[in-house]
Image 1: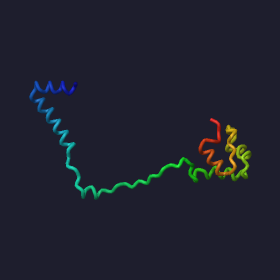
Image 2 (image 1 turned 45 degrees about the vertical axis):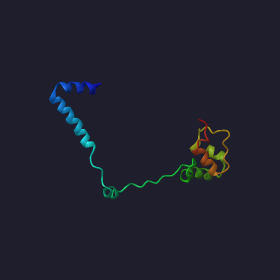
Image 3 (image 1 turned 135 degrees about the vertical axis):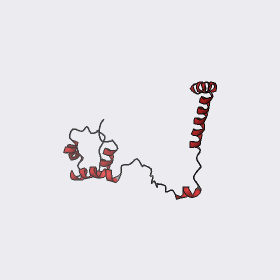
Image 4 (image 1 turned 180 degrees about the horizontal axis):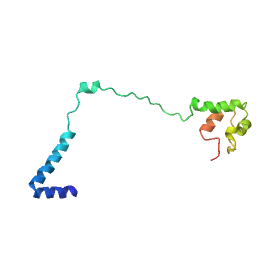
Length: 115
């Protein structure tokens, strides 16, 4: 609607019509620059990106601190629960890890604590 009103007003004033036409062609000229040549494109360096798919399992580096806690408590889950790091935490009743890896994975996947 605004464009139609501007065009109607421009039609009544020849100088304004010329200005509107100039703006339109100036915009087109800036948008239609020449495409780069093949050699220009080849000379450009592209960033390399490494991608990987997540497995859904915690990384070993993330598990290590929890495995260390398990080991420092001699592999006794009751001692882990009583340790200073986990005082006051509400453990899930069905969370009963048998080794350091199960413990670390369960904590990191949110299986160890009640919400």
